[in-house]
Amino acid sequence: MAPRFSFPSPPPSAAAEALRSEVRGFLSAALKDRTSLERSESWNGFDKAFSRSLGARGWLGMTWPKRYGGHERSAFERYVVVEETLAAGAPVAAHWIGDRQSGPTLLRYGTEAQKTRVLPRIAAGEAVFCIGMSEPDSGSDLAASRTRAVRSHDGWRITGTKVWTTNAHRADYMILFCRTGDGGAAERHAGASQLLIELKTTPGLTIRPIIDLANQHHFNEVHFEDALVPTDALIGTEGEGWRQVMSELAFERSGPDRFLSSIQLIVELIDALQGGGDAAELAVGRLTAHLIVLRRLSRGVAAMLEAGETPSLHAAIVKDLGAIYEQSIPEIARTLIEGEPDRASTSAFHAVLANVVLNASSWSLRGGTREILRGIIARGLGLR
Ligand SMILES: Cc1cc2nc3c(=O)[nH]c(=O)nc-3n(C[C@H](O)[C@H](O)[C@H](O)COP(=O)(O)OP(=O)(O)OC[C@H]3O[C@@H](n4cnc5c(N)ncnc54)[C@H](O)[C@@H]3O)c2cc1C
Image 1 (cartoon, rainbow, N blue to C red):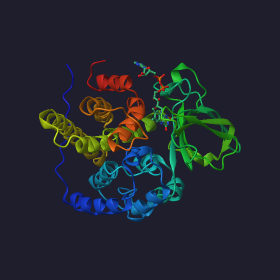
Image 2 (cartoon, helix red, strand yellow; image 1 turned 60 degrees about the horizontal axis):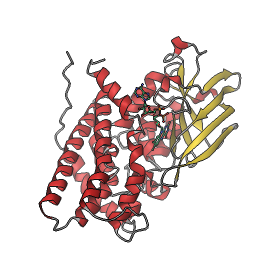
Image 3 (cartoon, protein in one colour; image 1 turned 180 degrees about the vertical axis):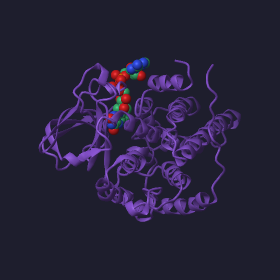
Image 4 (cartoon, helix red, strand yellow; image 1 turned 90 degrees about the vertical axis):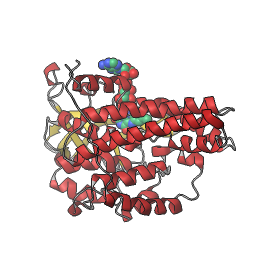
């Protein structure tokens, strides 16, 4: 029989709600010139000055210890900042990987020197991170990664290729998942480690662009050709990379970023539907009800993270349901408003619709595909 499980239902936090109006006030001024189309870029929008301004307000690295540049605030206060910035269509790409998963990974497993050197820079909006997990022949099957780091007298020598690396061309650091054991089938999980790579100074490293369906450059291939990084680039324990990367994915999969990617389209849809009658009201009511449920589940995961748990099953559920929701919105919108999607349209609705249509297919791939998440969920529920 499947085990019982539940999502905690944390009550609203007074401190977090007090912060909400401050964040909204800041965002409405900071983003006043941002067009609807730009807002629909969601977490692809890259603006380092904006990230710095969040850092200056203490809204990055919020839950981290003060000695590492953090602010020792609760997971729910951080949640408010994340959901408000995404709902407003803020350009978050320069900080969100560092704030959401690389920083927490370093905080949990990094050496004291790594934490002291890097975390304050993330919290200030200065250090940009990328994720070095996927490879040409191992995306879903991360344990099949072939990029290898070999310990030598002068550091780690790395050979291999990472792919789909979002913002590697703009990033300062990558957390690299690689093999450090001597290989062999028995080592699938045991022989992996994580290394902190300085992208701008490491010799033997080449970054090549991949242009996506929307004709934009976010992805890259990153080639390591006997690239040399110092011995102290190791994060955590050699050979423990698999366990570490699984906890990193729990940070990656549960947040409001997993159901707010097409929020700007909902905003434009509501505007375009004004006076649209029962069908319009029903559609908006349904979308809102689903959004509220997703938010409730996602806050439950935030509560579990706050309690120091690693809620991989719960995070996979939020991510899978969130992707279904995000991807359904363009289809629902198209049935309600006439006209073709067109990024160059003067109608904000049709421009945003075009952007969302071009990007939505990737939302059930990034951060783990639908099929893989369902495998995790089935295993977590004792069904396989
Ligand atoms: C927008 C976006 C941003 C990304 N950013 C990054 C990044 O910054 N860093 C990074 O490392 N990666 C990144 N990725 C890569 C992403 O994590 C991978 O695309 C994803 O894990 C799938 O891997 P793959 O593309 O190799 O597909 P594959 O693993 O080849 O899968 C192809 C299809 O087969 C299915 N499949 C595979 N194995 C199984 C199985 N065992 N059972 C059932 N079905 C299966 C999959 O579900 C999928 O539908 C990004 C991807 C996208 C779309």
